[in-house]
Image (tube, rainbow, N blue to C red; front, top):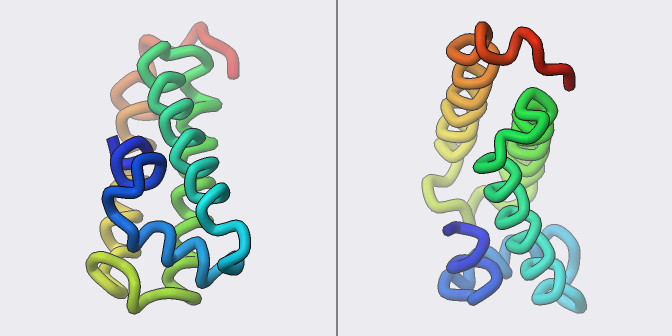
Amino acid sequence: MNGLYCKVLNLVPRHEEIVARILGEDYSRPLTIFIGLSEIIMAIWILTRFKSKLNAIVQIVVVATMNIIEFVAVTDLLLWGKLNIVFALLFIGLVYYNEFILNKNTNSFTAI
């Protein structure tokens, strides 16, 4: 939902402002759309459960990287300011717990 509504449909312009500040204004709209489409593809990947461990690792790396960059570069544009990093860490913990703790038994025979 975040990728589609906030980024692709630009219903929350703050996301494009973040991209513009970090990567430059010249291509901020197409890059924001690309990021939104990537989030939609990630959601579909999650729903398919295809290579779920790899999916979880990719999610953790992307969310951590994005949030560290945003924390350093554009804290003033974040919804909760510096607290955004806390919510990102909670989300990362949830992804890890769901995939590597809760699903430990169901994924024991599934390779990355």
